[in-house]
Image 1 (spheres, rainbow, N blue to C red):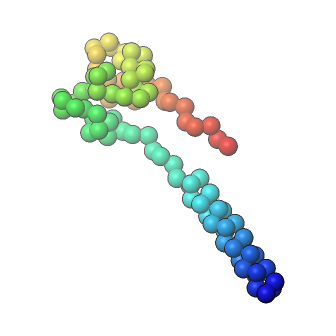
Image 2 (image 1 turned 60 degrees about the horizontal axis):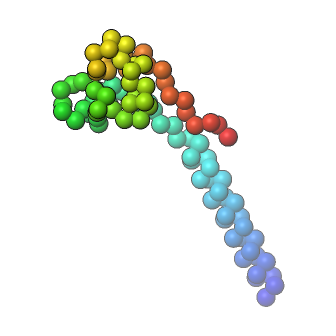
Image 3 (image 1 turned 90 degrees about the horizontal axis):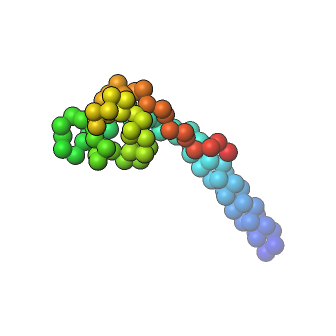
Amino acid sequence: MKRITLKTGLLFTMLVAFGTVAVNAQSKGERKEPPTYAKLLEEMDKDEDGLLSKEEVKGPLKDDFDKIDTDEDGFLSEKEFENAPKPKGRPKN
């Protein structure tokens, strides 16, 4: 009886260890690409005028809107978006 319990426990431990390694390997391999200006227009341009205003954007774009809008016209152009400072990613472990 002890032998079966020991084998079962060892098998369970190996499965847990293998599963943990597999999950960690997958999560490290996934990198999220930064959005393109076209993608942002698709997601945020509520009035579909082809421009991004401060009321339409969110996140880091909204927080730094005045810095990014270098021509101060109240909208973010593709050129302004490309020249904008990139947000810092999550710290690496």
